[in-house]
Amino acid sequence: MAHQINFNDQTGKHSFFSVKQKAWHGLGTIVQDYPTSEEAIKHAGLDYEVIKSPLFTQGRAMTIGNAGEIIDGEDISVHDYYATLRTDSNKVLGVVGKDYHIVQNRDAFSFFDSIVGGDGILYETVGALGNGERIFITAKLPGYIRVGSNDMIEKYLFLTTSHDGSGSITAAFTPIRIVCANTLNAALGNCSNTIKIRHTSGAKERLEQAHKVMGIANTRSLQM
Image 1 (cartoon, helix red, strand yellow):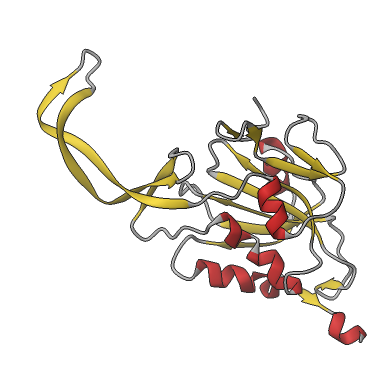
Image 2 (image 1 turned 180 degrees about the vertical axis):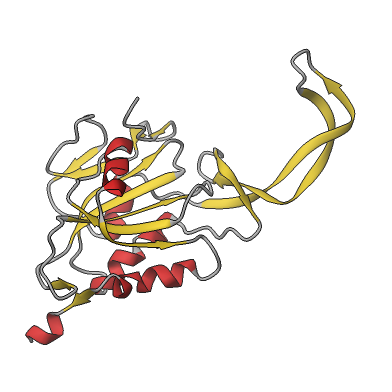
């Protein structure tokens, strides 16, 4: 399936929501009003936690299968490497090193909420791909937000991050409404004012300040 939208076996729902306009794949929840970040997380099924779990392999007194795989053996810890794990489903999302810091899905929304103090962002689409190892958030900025010294040309502000160690947290502007894996890739190839943050110590704090680096300013106080 080209969309790669996550299907949650426990809820029986796809991890995606959209405002008013249905996506081409017809999946997920369609709402009529723009939600808050807390509502958007629930609509899209992103209200799960991710943890780092120790990795083990097997050795000594091993039983080897016909294909060369280990069938049984003594557990051996793989030092400094961890599996990232969804706590709601116990699905393994990826393998990361000891310095990798998890940015929870709810923390990703802190980037948008910090722009306007938690009120006013128009969340268009939110979703999770694969087993939930990658998420995307697409939003519009309210009219009192200024980007740089010029009016915003691109229509959407988006953020994407992963839980499998495959890439940085990325935020940028794009004219593309992201609804699946293909449109996310297209947006990453057609974006501007891009900022990337690695999953290291302090990532959440840098994410909350990223809008300032991108030149996004809340001008409400100037209009009062």
